[in-house]
Amino acid sequence: MGIGIWQALIVLLIIVLLFGTKRLRNIGSDLGSAIKGFKKSVNDDSETKPQEKTNDQVEHQQQSEATRTDHKDQ
Image (cartoon, rainbow, N blue to C red; front, side):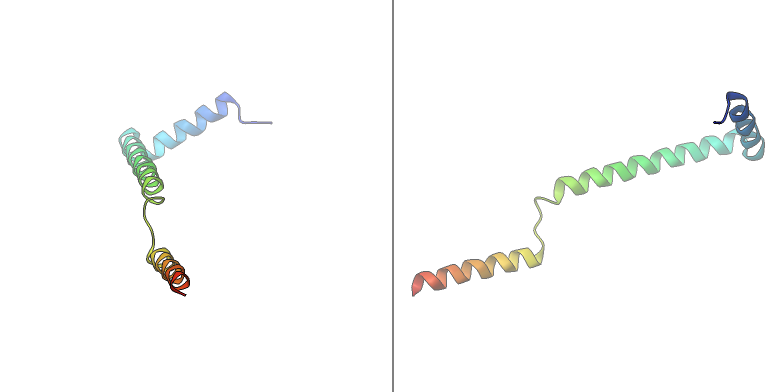
């Protein structure tokens, strides 16, 4: 048995009476901007991660190149 339409309306009415419409509007806009900021940061991170190399990766690559040149010299 799920929540019926009347039960949902009663819960919504109680929430509006407790918090007021202005405060609910502010909470909604704050939540929306937080979600937008989160999505933007996730998209920015996923776009820049493959292009960036960490110091460990750079050092490993340099060591690999140095090992290859040592073997060529012999």
